[in-house]
Amino acid sequence: MSNFKGLAHIGLFTEDVEASKSFYMNNLGFKLDYETKLDKPNNAWSKIAFINLNGMVIELIEPSDKTLVKKGNNGSVDHLTIEVKNLPDIVSNLKTRGITFETEVPIINEKLYNGVQIIFFRGPSGERLELFEFLGR
Image (cartoon, rainbow, N blue to C red; front, side, top):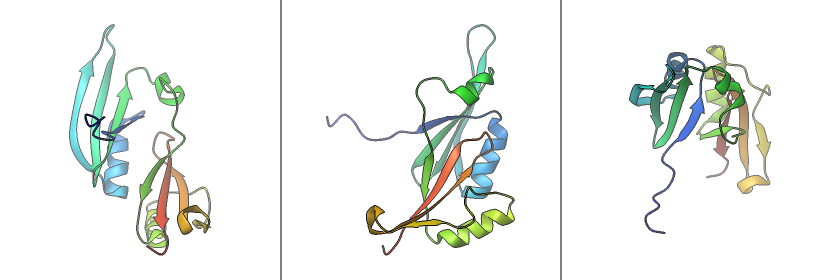
């Protein structure tokens, strides 16, 4: 199995690739790796942008058929998690940018990995995002 190298990227549908790029880059520190527009049969297209945060690569996909954004294409992903340090400070900063969270403060779970704190929020196309911090590491 040595030919398998690991996770290459995670693909997320978005209604507006420009808005999503701006959200992830300006609020969460991602950098743009690559972008293009792919033409498909029957005058369809997809705008694609690969963004990167320390090796975590997300492929933002804006299809010409916007109904794919909410229902997906194959399978489903509940949420995307980003590991952080100093979660309360990050939450405070994101709140000043107008981002709302599912809970007022991070949730602490001492049973998971001997202690973590997490909080969930939504991206610009409704995708569920989690910020995750190990405690005591």
